[in-house]
Length: 607
Image (cartoon, rainbow, N blue to C red; front, side):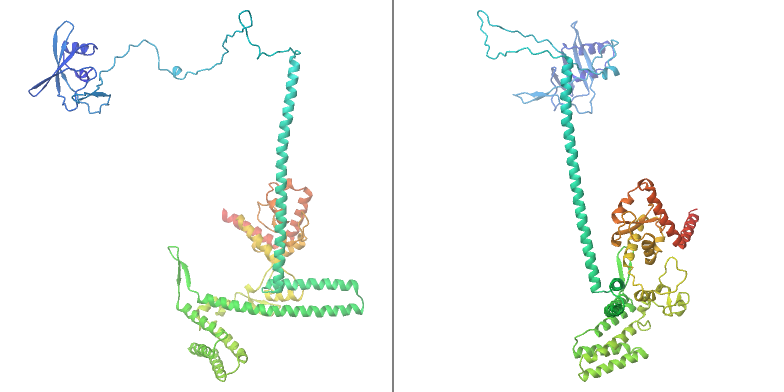
């Protein structure tokens, strides 16, 4: 059908009749197209279309032949659709080359009458299908040998009837087979379990072996470091360890003498022991003099580097900014001159240049110190000109170096050094922070005193306490100092405002470990202090002497994993721990008062 038939809009009977005839499939339509003065007559077939170079007019006159033989002319208005029509195929004329495209009808399809059956419903669209298997009949036939038909029996099998098997016998046989399968399955599971246990055991043994090797290496390394510290002592802790080892040796020798000797022989052995002790003390003293000299040079170098270093701060863009002030530049010049003054193996001309630079630097200020330096410089210059030996000039050069160092440390000559001195030059600042040491008879700042948790006043300074320890008890607190560092590092991770651990000193921790906990693990009685740690008893509470327990490192790691202490430990063990806590609370009663006051202040500030 032609697409233009939908646009017929003629009033009257001709219009209705034309519509009925156009919708018929067997009609014959002729179209007269009038465009300007030309008249073209074309015959439209069912699947043909006007070529693309033809312009469709706005109105068409359609001639319709009715069944009665009458001819009617109908004017049809053409509606131009803006939508792009789909390509439905076509063909091309072989001779003329004209292309013909198939046309599509625009007539609305005829609607089917409603028969009252509902076809669009939920039950129809959501119908559940079912599948069911069924045994179908399969007809077969057999053939036997007879007259006129021979059947081969090569593939035939002879079946012999056996004993009839009852249902109970059948189920019993099935049960026996199931038991066999279960036994094999359980054996398979048991093999998997045993293999897993073997693997776990092997891993455990490997881990224990590695841990033993690691601990042995750590012990060897610790002994090597201790031996190195004893052979080349440098710090205060090294000399405390030497004096402690000397005291332990003296006690062992004294015990041997008391056990084996009596009378005059014992007195002679004691005198010999005293002489050996005096020689060892003198040897330690010589090492201490060398170590003090090295430490003094390091301190001088450190203070000179700090004074000559530029001022540093972080700028707004996050970069580090450095600035040299006139004071730091002055410190750099004095440091360079001091280094040149202490250089060895200089020629005579180089030494003379250094002395002239030193003289030109100190003559800027006229005082007793500078005049003495100038006098010594002139004396060394005169001796150099007299070709004096270098060995005879060592004392004079050392004196010049010490006086110039005193010149550098004077704030009037080196202003930058004022912020690095420990003692302020303003005497008014010392009035509120100076205490009297009864042992040395000196007035010292508060930083020179070391207080324990039970101390009521400042009586003995650090240096006096060190001399008293060397001459009497000769205790080594380096292990407790290291243990205290470990406890403080572990307590910082909790972030629960724990204070008491930062108040306790090495002396307090020594009393807590040796006296209250008897210097051994309460679980395994392990006595090596290198393997012991003192941790929280109740992890939820802050560390305190009455909330701690002394364990080995492995025991402490297992203690932290416990959720309920009273279920993990026996009641007798818990009572032993509580008894130690009562003793600690009585000894550190001042810390108890401080803890209660701090808790009260915290609660008031929180409210």
